Structures are given as C-alpha cells and as structure tokens.
Amino acid sequence: MDAKDILGLPKTPLPIPQEKKSRPQKDSQRKPDGISREVYALTGGVAPLMPSIDVSQLKRRPPSDEKITWQWLPFTSSARKDDLQLYHWVRVVNGVPPTGDYSFAKYNKSVDVIRYTDEEYEKYLTDPKWTKEETDQLFDLCERFDLRFIIIADRFPTHRTVEELKDRYYSVSRAILVARAPSPGEVAGHPLVKEPYNVTQETERKRALSMVLSQTKHQERKDAEVLAEAKRIAESRMAARAAEEPDLPVPSDVGLESAEGAVGPGDTISPSNVQAPAAAIAPSTSVIADNASTLASLRMLRVYLRTYALEQMVQAASSSAGLRTIKRVEQTLQDLGVNLKPKVPTKAVCAEHLELRKEILTLLNLQKQLQYKEAEGSSFRDGSYGDMPGTAKRSQRAADQDRTFVPDTISFGVIPGDRVVKREQKRKGPGRTSETPSSPAGAHKRPRKMKASDL
Image (cartoon, rainbow, N blue to C red):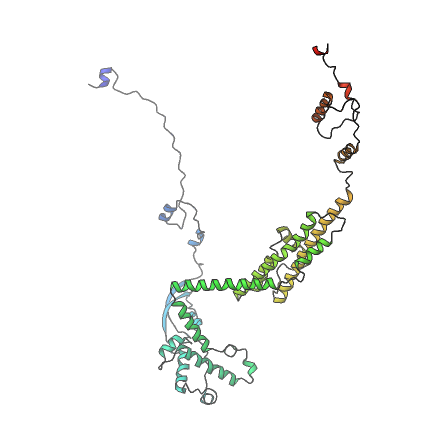
C-alpha cells in the first residue's frame, strides 16, 4: 500500500499543464577565418588593444602567373679577395635566379690607410724613437684591423702604449698629406691637419678619468660639497661686484629727489605722490640683483646655449613685472615686427633684443604713471570742496560757531524746558537742525505747584 491507496486517489496522475520557460537564444558567433580556435577562445571575440593584421592579408596568395621556389645556389662576395664560393637558399621567381653581388657585401667598409715610400720616409718621417720596421708593422696592423688601436696594441710585437701608437700613426699621416700637397692651404681643412692628435692631453685625460672612476663614495661626497661651496662663493662675489657696479647710470636717490621736487610749495604731499616714484624705482634694484645672479649662474655653467641665456635674462628683467605687463611687451614686439626669439641669436643680437625689451618695459611703466597723474589731476581740476557732499553741514556748523551767544534776560540757570529741547535735538541726530526759530524758553515753562509753606 502506498499513500494513494490510503487516500483513495487514482494511481494514474492527472496531467498538469506546465508552461515551459523560453530560454533566450544565444547569438552564435562564428569564428573568423585566420584565427586559431585557442586564440579565439582566450579572447572571446574581443577586439585587441593593439592593431592586428587584416584577415584578408593572412591568406593572401601570390598571383597565379608567378611561380616561386627556393633553391640552394652558390654565391660569391666582392668583399672577399680569395673568391670563396659558398651556398645559401635563394628565392627564385619563375625559374630565374637573382643576379648581382652578395646583398651583405655593401657593409664591408674599410679605412683608407695612407701609404708612404722609402724616399718619403727618409725625407719626412724619421724619428729617433721609432724604426722603419716598427712603423711598417704599425701601418700594416692599422690597415688589417681598421684602426682598432686596442687590438693593434695587443698584436704589436714590442711594448707600446695605445697613445704612442696613435701619435705615431697620425703624425706620419699628417706629414705625408702636407708633403704631397702642392700648397699647405689645400689640406688645411683635412681632419688630420686641422685637429692634430695631442698625446699629452689624451694621457692626462685618461689619468683623470681613472682617478674619478676609482673614487670612493666618501670622496665623491666630499668633492660635491667642495664644488657646492665654490659655486656659492663665486655667486656671492658676482652679486657683490654687480652691486658695486650697477648697470643703471642714475642712482635711486636722484629719482626720489626729482619726485620730491615735482611737488610745488602750495601742493599737499599725498602718500600716492611719494609711492608712485618709489614703486617705479624699487624694481630697478631687484632687477639688478636678478641680472647679477643670472649672470653668475651662467658663468658657472661655462658652456650654455645663447637662447637659454637670453631666456634667463628676459625672465630676470621681467621678474618685477606682472603677467599683463609681460603680455603687453610681447604684443608691442609683435606690433614692431620683432620676433619674440631672435632667429640668429648671436651675442650682439641678444644684447639688442634684451635692451629693446627693457626700453619697452620702461615705456609701459611711464605710460602707466602718466595715466595715473592725469587721472589725479583731472579729479582735482573738476571737483571743488563746495560741491562735495557734506559742505552744507560744514558751512552751517561754521555759522553756528560764529553766532554770538546772547544770554537770557530771565535767568542764567538751567531751565527744564531747555533740557527737553536738548533731548529732542539728540533724538533728531547730528546735523538735523530746524529751519524755524526756536520758541522762547519761557513759553514751555509749566506753572509751579503751590506748596504749604507758600500759604
């Protein structure tokens, strides 16, 4: 027995309609041609970050009229003197093998070593430190190893340093060139004649280089401190020298005296009158200091570009000016047809360019001061003290002060009514005076109450 028999249910189950959920159809993506299945499974069809080769180029086939084969063919190279024959694979098109020299023979470069005769050696090349046999061996090795003097020194039969070998080779080559030339001026531009080899300088350079490379960390740190201290001392001396000998011919005291002399005896000296010339003179000292520090830093570099020096000097000259003033200077240069940076930055051109910038900056400052003075003069010319607000108050107060005091004939004491009038004036505020004449003090007096003692 089961649960259906106990409950009396039929054994055949009733058909229960079930709605089947519709599954979304997957978009079938076909693997593109030319990509392996493993690579496509890893990427999932996502576009690569880097540009890939076009699919059409992966299965590109040569034209049907060309038949390409690879053949094992012999070849010779013009770079070899022994006519050695070797073999390599060659791409043959339509059964026609390629012709011409070996493709890598063009990279066979050699040095043209100057050779001498016995007569020339006896006449121009004799040296007590070198024999003719050693000189011949040196030139043979130079031609064989293409002036690789490290290898030449290793293969040389006698003990000679690299500097001695270089000095002998270049001195002999230079002497042969000068001797064979019709005139010394024809070979004056040759590198061997124009820049002769200096064996003393080369020896000293290598000695200094070996000392630098063999230094310890402590010695390098100590040398850096010494160089920094020397740079600081040099900059301070340059600044002191520039301060002692300024570029401006007029001292700052003259500007102050002229500014004070411009004010007449009847004029009032306002802070603006003194502040304007002082503001125009104060940047000059700062510009001098900036120029001195810039020149000192450039002299410490020893080697620098002229354009870099010009930019530093322009920044130092424009350090006291604002951004709008600098833009106005550049606009003035463009209006004058002058380039912001000289095309041929020689020393004279850079000096004239910097002087022009300074004159334009001075002109703009003078124009600004002129506008300021004109605005100040027009304000004093157009306006007067009588038209200004508050003048009526001053005149009325002056009239009140000039008014003679007339004492009251009744009493010189303080009257209660007078206190009331003063309180009302305080409530009205300062300057609010009544145009109607005030009533007599006795009109506001109230009758005094009778006391018992008065009866």
